[in-house]
Amino acid sequence: MARIHDDIVSTIGGTPVVELKQLAPPHVRLFAKIEAFNPGGSVKDRLAIGVIEAAERAGALKPGQTVVEATSGNTGIGLAVVCAAKGYPLVVTMAENFSVERRKLMRFLGAQVVLTPAAEKGTGMLRKARELAETHGWFLARQFENEANADIHSATTAREILDDFEGRRLDYWVTGFGTGGTLKGVARVLRQARPETRIVVAEPDNSPLLGSGLRQARGDDGAPTESHPVFRPHLMQGWSPDFIAKLAEDAGDAGWIDQVVAVAGEDALARSRDLARKCGVFAGTSAGATLAGALAVAEDAPEGSAILCMLPDTGERYLSTPLFAEIAEDMTDDEIALSESTPSSRFAAPAPAREPEPAPEPEAEPLDAEAEAYVGDVVGDADKPVVMFALEWCEFCWSARRIFAALGVDYRSVDLDSVAFQKDDLGGRIRPVLKARTGEPTIPQIFVGGELVGGCSELVEACGSGRLDTLLDAAGVKHAPATSIDPERFLPQWIQPRAAAVQ
Image (cartoon, rainbow, N blue to C red):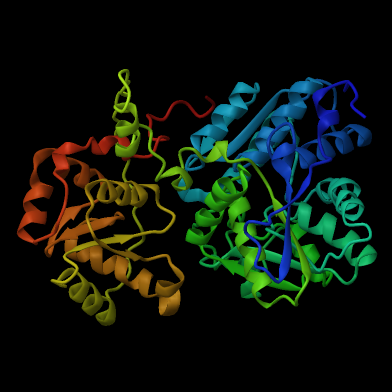
């Protein structure tokens, strides 16, 4: 029966489980727990209320005291919801490369956002949060080590799953690991109450922290002291930081993880789009990644198996990321045709131009004969005269892909951080070869007919100057005129002048 809530935080939890009949293989049943139904739009609302109220009970958080935490976005949004409702000031630290929607949402909810350099990754924003807490006497939420994070999931998420599947099969539960709170909190309850349920953890295929078997370096307080040695940047924002959280490691040490599944970034994006277009479920890249892990499990699951996966958040905080790279802002040709099929019509103005920012310079490495030969063969391949040396996770590479797509240009993408190029570190050995060849350390590096175009900004310039048309014509590549598009509109939306440390 409907009831009137005293405040917004009392609406946290109680999220629905939905069967994904349109996506499930015929021999299994596939379910998703949709955490976007929380008021802040993600599973991290649970973490936020659990950590804050545990600190209140313990006296660690005083009335009016400032809360500070490092976040990729969702935890910060959840904390902003809870802190706004309870009257606590909030400061979050976040690496600058996370989607701009996240920082706007947190600021809209009253939080202050301190950006940290992208090159310092998650450990950099953690360090900044600790410094701010120590300097100003603020309460540090410590989501990655705080037992209250796991406890709230044992008390709510796990119990909801048990209630929803009472009297039903539940053969697999699939989740990412992130902070480890959902994993540890739910796994320990399922292991006791539903021991037949296999617990599966999914992670990026190019950044297999759990799959590597290597322990995380951490201090006496459980916080990581450095990046995990196998971490690589990936497309799933917030799904797997550059370290293994203590709570996640606890779950592994307790023997609660039955299987680890590696997920490709492209599969995560594709499954997010499938959720939207085939099921009407609006979810983010981390949700698509977890669904991809569940579908991988389904391939070998026995007939009649029931698989439940977690969908951590909504899709609106990914608008400026590669998830929406192919979604047009202006009318497509088909939409223009529809508009012109009746007497009245309207045309959208192009998006304002933004200046790109160079990628960070990698450390110099010795040249490698195999890598030199590979680069020479690829750049000189007459059958594929357009080649881009790229990174799967890099937004500037995605900008270049979108420009080529708009022009109808067939090109080869050599993704240096992909699983194929991580073998024997071929991708890492190629980067210094490219630097020696071009004099530039940045990625992407784009060649047409063996001639260097440059990176993303040079590609934009080449479109406007006509140079790209000239190079493509000389190489015999079919394409639309480069001057027919505004290439700057394909650049990442988060590019903007840096403001002060606290904005």
